[in-house]
Length: 419
Image 1: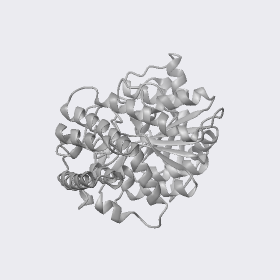
Image 2: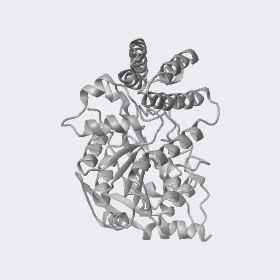
Image 3: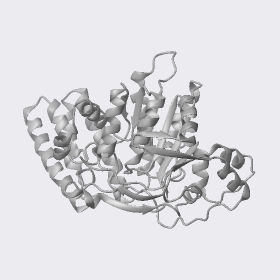
Image 4: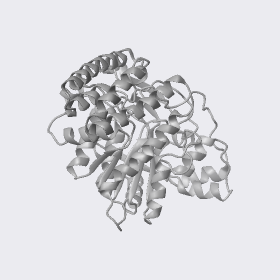
């Protein structure tokens, strides 16, 4: 969920991935470009968009719809926890009619989410037992997006590492499948201990004692011994869990390589998860992605010198002569969900302002604090930049311009809500 290499704050990713995640960095008070070519192109390609409930209208929405209809894959890059973005994504899906939705959650979460979204009501009991076990989709607005996608027969696919808040659920899932009674009992006990520990971390708002961080080698060896005698499904679940634990523990230790390992895992998972949806000799199905904005651009990521899922998507689409569309949507200011406290959700809400965030500064500065959303067609800026007709000194802003086709700025957001 990295969105920028700067402005760090503790944001709970819940079950989606790193509970200790880097979102934005401090500093980043880079000045907006003063190049007259930049400002001229910015003004000429700025359009308003009006949200009325779940409906969108205006010149910006008309322009977006035209390009969505021309695209096989649409990739939405966001900052998580803003209640308006799932509704926007749902509107995009109504235009695109995707066959597959690729989400920033793991494949087991995607399976649970699909099953729960097919039932009436919100999965309150599930969330009470396993808080944040659906990652972002533990928030009401995100869950309603999943439900809307399922209602139009869109398959939900997860490609993330196993969620950091899902150790208890994962171990319970293994226990459901193992045949050995002693192994089943051991997994149930370990799941209960893990769930209690992880819930306590969520309440504290600090995630240094999470199961995925503190899991000991002796316990890992015991899990491997159990799985060795069980079905391929149990072995696969454990392999995925332990690969994710290794990433979490590397990240917690401060050693380099955790982020690259995570990206590599997501890209491998994407290739694997898409196989059932690709018929021999045919192009890939229409797809919609929604991840943190660092993941969805083409080329170098705005989080640094990484080439992420969005870049792989471009390569896959190119292989089949298909077109991708990359949309960066973010708030100018307001509130967003930024924690996982299951007892007091008010503690999960944070205020923010991105007027001085380098990667979007010209766009937020050109958006009024009240009024309609603003849609910026970034492609004319990209062409001018590649033709050396304008200069952009900020590396973050360069990555936004090169990686995204549109930037959508919401004047003021509200935070996502729990059930």
